[in-house]
Image 1 (cartoon, helix red, strand yellow):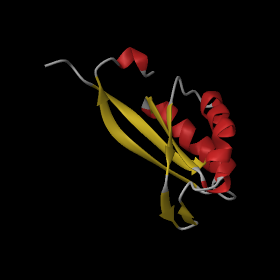
Image 2 (cartoon, one colour; image 1 turned 120 degrees about the horizontal axis):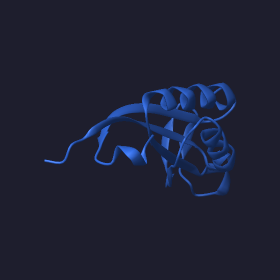
Image 3 (tube, rainbow, N blue to C red; image 1 turned 90 degrees about the vertical axis):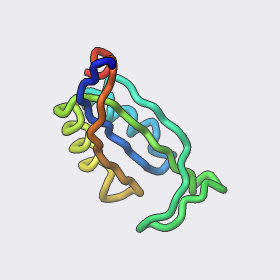
Image 4 (cartoon, one colour; image 1 turned 30 degrees about the vertical axis):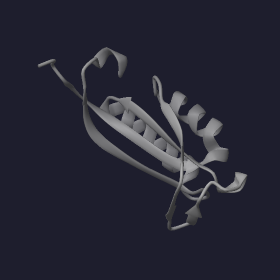
Amino acid sequence: MTALHPRKLVTVVCEATLERAVLDTLRAAGAGGYTAAEARGQGSRGERAGDWEGSRSIQIQVLCDADTAGRLVEALLARYSADFALTLWVSDVAVARPGKFP
């Protein structure tokens, strides 16, 4: 079996209008890359069905090491959590090519 290496997966779900700002924040905090997709759901700030521009959400995922994950979470919470619909979580994952996810 191919050797696997521990990393963190930081997942962010937020208002689509924040996409550029959140990506800038992630880069500044050390994210080397990301994957983004549209998302729909319901939570404490109501339903985000995506049926009109103000109701669109996105999900952004970043694979990184533990130190970078900590910086990402800290920066995102400090900048966006008080005023915007933003949910984030960090998962332990294993990757096959660790050099791609510093």
